[in-house]
Length: 455
Image (cartoon, rainbow, N blue to C red; front, side):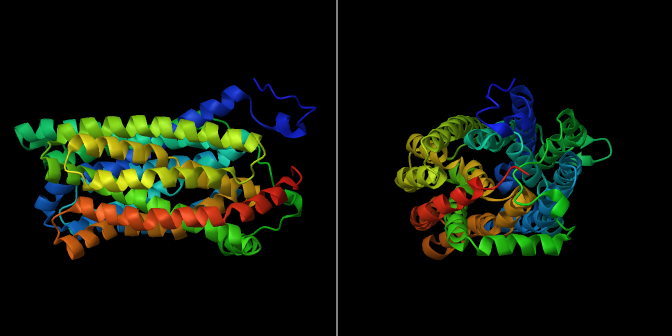
């Protein structure tokens, strides 16, 4: 039931009821959980994959980051325009089906090239979810509640990562104890391959659940749909770039700030299990249990705190609320991240990284909601996809590779932890500066967006 008074807010009646809106958020968060579970499970399988496929740390960094990120970004550009023009539920259904089959295909890889192609498929499938999901959420909630809604959607990422480590570690250790198993159709199957099959194949059936939610009415257009000419993909992005050029200070600060923050956040996530195994000598089950619990708890608390904090600042008329809050989070998180990566104590590592992740895990919620608040409805899917194809692509592809590269160049390949510390120490301060410089441009962009009629 929508409790807002239509007399105070004439557009309130256009939003779905509170129950429907939050159910949609929960289901989309579940699908995001599945996507991150499929995407992240490879992090726990570094050493067995390296041994069987004969690949290096840098090649693994490419598998986790570059191969996924390039495809994720390229297909995301197409999915973004589709999200602005077509039924978003159908796009999500196709996306879930593709990434689930591609995850299972990772288990069939016999060499680096085959694994690379499978990861490309995972990236292609997952590209369609977030542009459509965040577009649906933007049409389901008022601006003051949007960050909380996107934060809850983004909880799927934290829970997905946590489950990947927790259940993946238990699964790999359990099957490793008995060696390879013989499966119908797949034949002789090694533990790391079984993990990919068990996580990927059920997703094909799960894809149908998206049709349980409604397609909300689109709102917040800068021009009426009746006056908007039909446009293809190239024209859609030409219009987006023209829109961004008029607000270039906001977008430069936004892309730089959240891009650098994402590099530190995503880059470390690719290497936590390997660092814990090599530095502390922990088994897959130990790593999965502690890292999984830490990711779920820190992600849950961080995203909920962020959602309420940004909503509070918006209600207090801070139109640059997103930039204020996340710059503050980066300032506190940076020393904890560096100290945790350099520590030889597993307890200190877990505490420091838990605080680091609690503060930085809402990055998706903050960058998406701050983009969608200042972007017209007809460009929101394209806008989120364009971020993923530029700043997001750089972060996803360079983060894991840079960590391995710094470790090789500066520490003779003996310390992935120190490589992660270098990335945090360089990228997080740059992110803080960019977001603080972007406060005034964001205030100006939000004021202009508030002047649009609800068309």
